[in-house]
Length: 590
Ligand SMILES: Nc1ncnc2c1ncn2[C@@H]1O[C@H](COP(=O)(O)OP(=O)(O)OP(=O)(O)O)[C@@H](O)[C@H]1O
Image (cartoon, rainbow, N blue to C red; front, side, top):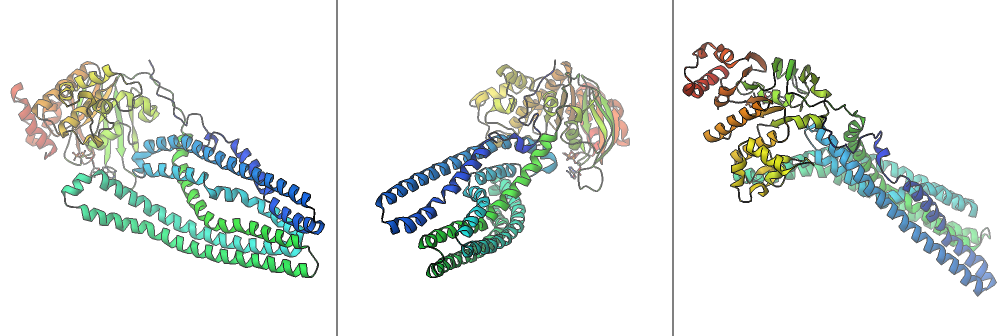
């Protein structure tokens, strides 16, 4: 039987741009833009006709006819403009719908190595959506039509064309300077914004702790300090870009006045008719206005470029990932071959020389003092980190060769710091399994000996658990986390201190659950500081300072330390006796 996880939205796609639906809309946007810009010539042409023909001929019929044609053309222009902006906003929504799932997938897959900014990446996708439907994009789309206006001005008179050309060049240089300032400041602001967001997330997430410890004002001040750091480049950029914008406005007005003055001079010299004076001043304004808007548009463009780079950095690895062949359901045989692990940036490995094997239906208990590397080992076994060297295999296949979602269905992982996801207890157990069935949820809860506890809650399985399960006690969270780990058809269970918050009854229930899971053929790897679980262990792995000191049956591993040589006397004494050995062998302090 092969369990096929749902298809990823990125499956089979080659490039991020290739994903976006309605790319044909771009052709229509271009067609509408051509029409809108051509129809903008209506007013200058109308002025020329009215001044140079109607007034000289005195023909009211011509005036009425020209006015009706101009009104109709302007009506079409407005309609095309509306259609263009509608297409752009639909394209922008399509962009977000397509890119956001890929970015979220990339963020989830990559979260362990990056450890930051997940929601920040999605904010960038939203920023891009807003940008795509903004006036900045229409300004940029209209920019290539400016040379056509300049040509028309040259056609009216070389002076008009020259004024527009010089004005465009000056405004272009100002735009480039403004773009350069915007890019530098945007990059600086973006890093600071990321730090502020991370701090804010931490403060809001741990709001109760912040309040309880009397850190409220300190947290607010810390946020303000980081926020100021994020804002100051933005403010600096705004001030500079605004100053350039004001200078550009002045340049544009001067050039418009120059065009009118030059036109009047040419009329006086009888070189042009008065109609062209009006038309040219309208056209010069029409040419220079978008150039001026581009100065502020550059800034939005720089932010959009920066957002696009960030979005691509997350999305491209998702697209590049090759689909993995689904493997048969594993038996639960776990082989760890000479594994070492050194996190990025760490000077020395935190795990080295780890070498052991667990057969199906085995309980392996991992012990060792604080900081020995037990939790890190479990993260490696859960494929949350990749070993720096060596291989971890589940049924002969290296973990990195398994499809991540398929592997996740066979591996139940209970981290040390249990965080529950979902609104209700039932959702916390089934997680995001789209095929969750009530009987599977209750079966997992029963197996974890959590069913009765859940039924005793106010709304049973429908009880709201609050954010990260904060409406539940530590023990309740741990038992529901255990039910989540047991949920479905798990072949390998990785439990990191599952009894940390349990009372003696809870520990007994945990042992009985572990024995039931073992009886079903699953493999269990359990990290513990407490002795009770050692009494049901088939093998013990002893770690110290990231090194494997011993692996084997409890009777061989526990007496390894000279101070822990006393054999277990009778079963009733076992827990207490093992407890003293664990403390001596591992130096455990809890
Ligand atoms: N991402 C990381 N980068 C650098 N060092 C790390 C990282 N994660 C863990 N460590 C270090 O690795 C060591 C082992 O940590 P780990 O959490 O695995 O210990 P542990 O045996 O589970 O301890 P405890 O019993 O207290 O839970 C610690 O010294 C820890 O500081």
